[in-house]
Length: 114
Length: 113
Image (cartoon, rainbow over all chains, first blue to last red; front, side, top):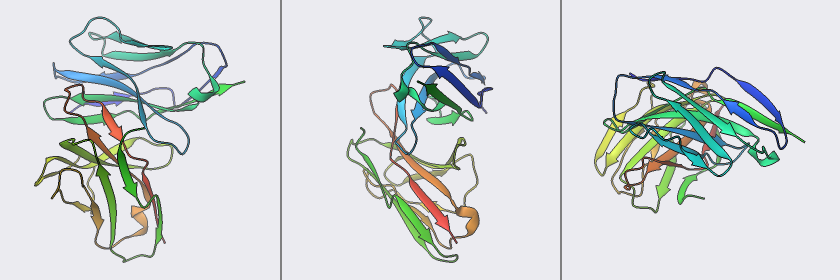
């Protein structure tokens, strides 16, 4: 079984600054994907960024990037130039591609302050 | 936004009633999922389906049942609602492109009184 741990229940950042959200996971699988999803208040959950476990290069998507440390089973999300619209709950998720099921972390509530 | 829909968005119902939460997607995705999420909390997988006539129970035990008669439709039913079923229910699907991104519906917020 997989576990996903987000150790920061709440975080805040000033607009335009950089913030890093932490995520660690535990698995014995070799084939998997890791994701960060964003759930804004009262809105749909959407994908922020995806990382394939077999790729060593860290994924980037505009202001969002990850630091994927496979040996340490760590997958942190860095948000640069934070914007008010980044205020949301962020979930780290592990996808077991063999089983086709995801395990989610507890979430981190991020508040971007003006 | 993704083409995945859930109805109703909000439901307040009395104990003992039978309810069905609807989920539909127009993307032709085979894999579909139901999650239960208490406010501000993690998601728990309660049911999933790999295609028509395929349904499996998830990691969190649930008294609900699901069916998958058509690819685009994955309803969840509670035969007898109880206050402990009060929660948000999220439906999701995965594309066939092998990238495993989950597309989520807007959710149904259920309150059982």
